[in-house]
Image (cartoon, rainbow, N blue to C red):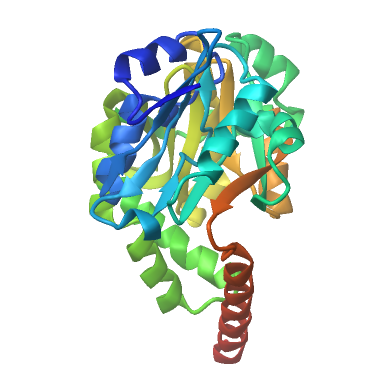
Length: 344
């Protein structure tokens, strides 16, 4: 097996042409956008096997960090791309290569619907974080999705939104980012209240993770692959979703003003339009993203015909720090919850 890093872009694009399950962040342009957003560099790896098959593992690493103390991470929606589905022996060889390296940690997230294969191959000593995501299988035919996958309630909500005199616009890149970010900040406050979390903590964390300039770099880097669908009521932003669309589509972010979006069912119309757009572009899948343990969020996604997939994020670590991180995060959550309850 031959390993080349960073992966040659021409080979990467050639492999992508035969991988019908790839999403935007698994492309060279997607990795470039992630690197620009987070101040990272491309450390992707190409694996070439004796039979001529090649596998690409997209990876990013922080610029200027010592290799011994750096974390390399794959995109959060799909990692390996290959000529057709990756084979068990190829996946095994990839993990053997990663285990022999000297970086502090490598985080890899498979495409949600490939979780079963990965779990049967990945060594047991690799750290695992359980994930749940929902994906709509499209088949390129919106009428079939509308009648066969959307629930009756979803179709009624879409029709209600269509009668609500909503103004809907689709912008590429960062064209609608200022309005989206205003909605996002309102959503952060709402999410904090729902979790009984102090508002100032939620705002600080959102500014740290998703500051305006960081999102702008992502969206500019992705160009027309990044689409913001915006619904307005009387000229006022009510709801917006960010969809990354290439060979397949990925619902990346969403935000809303509940007082405006709730009565109009704006979110249902936005997802309907994004799914219709993805079908028209020939996409096979509409990934609605990670759901976690939220039953209300899972119920919302199921109304569009999204199927639930359980899979894992895998962490190849020189020192098993994931277990310690879990305990620390659990302690912080409990402290913040008690503080939020007292202040309320």
